[in-house]
Amino acid sequence: MPATVRRGPAALLAALVVLAPGGLAAQTPIHVRSVRPEGELRLRGEWDGRTAATGDDQAVLSRIRLGALADLEPWLRVVVQLQDARAWGTEANTLTDASADQFDLHQGYVELGRPGRLVARLGRQEVALADERLVGPVGWTNTGRAFDGAVVTVPAGRATLTALWLTVAERDALLPTGLDPQRNEGAAADGWLSGLAATVPGAWGTLEATLLHDRRAATDESWTGHLRMHGTHELRWEAAGAYQFGSRRRAYLLSGRLGTALGRGSVAAQVDLLSGDGDPGDRTRRAFHSLYMTGHKFYGFMDYVVALPSATADAGLLDAMLRAAVPAGRWDLRADLHHLRTAARRAGRRALGTELDLTAGRALAPGTRLELGVSAFVPTDLATSVLPAFGGGNATTYWGYTMLTVRFP
Image (tube, rainbow, N blue to C red; front, side, top):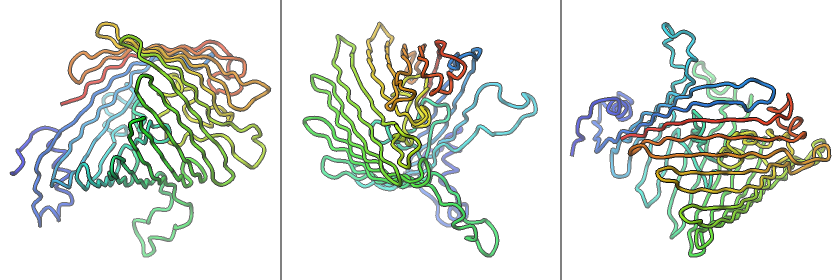
């Protein structure tokens, strides 16, 4: 059945997707079975006092995403998502600045295959593996992360297998003009991420296994194997470990979590250890590299240690956490307490500080959510030499936000 004519931005996006290139569309009419528009508007105001010995700052961040999913055949669909992500007031001139420097294609890919069978996504796309400890879209940030590449997913019995190949840094692309388009080949090697992942559910819980090869992108070159097991029976538990190796690299990650329901809420304790380099002067790198992880949800909302190993100057991280969540009327309340230490000693010490994160959220209407949060970090003397934000002293720092998210339709 021919697709219904749709008006508005979603129809325009769908038309751009299914009618390009123009020569092909002119020869063979494209049958559009359905078009589903999607959108998001997110506004976040932040009060930022995260840098010691520096005055507080305020900012309003906005993110607008507008996209469409066009089904062309039962086995073929196209997804396009445009994004405008900016801080209010960053235009050079409120009257004459007509540039679109904060406007981008966030996602744009072709999906081949049928759900429940082999599915291949080709193009720019968000990628999330397991709990996003190694690869994630980092949805908290104003722009988010997307990769250019191919992701293939196929069921295998009860398991799901995923293979990926993502170009992270194109350093010697073909030249657009001239008789020798490859004359810059080898000037600098491309950086890419490839790997395999498997998810296997069972009566005892779920096993997730990942093997990634990062080639001259986030690292010089490294392999990372990751295993995670988790379940939600009487106790909510999780155990994970990763080993990272490659050219002069030997590093590891260990994580354990145990929690339980508490009335209508929950409480949990968790410990994460990311190895550090005890002797930065030797030839072996022993600090675990977090690759492309979504760090915000793991190691404190103030984001002091999300970019490891550089965030702690290769000293690694030991994070002991207590987490609690409880509903209060129409609000969801949450408290996270982090005690942060380095994995390797620096100047004979390891303690970095303690962070408390308090958040509250509620739905205002279908697709609309309001969130509030406030955090505080109490540093130690070691933080002044390891964490860049405390170069001016070890004063307690604060941070807070208010965020409104509207998703449609």
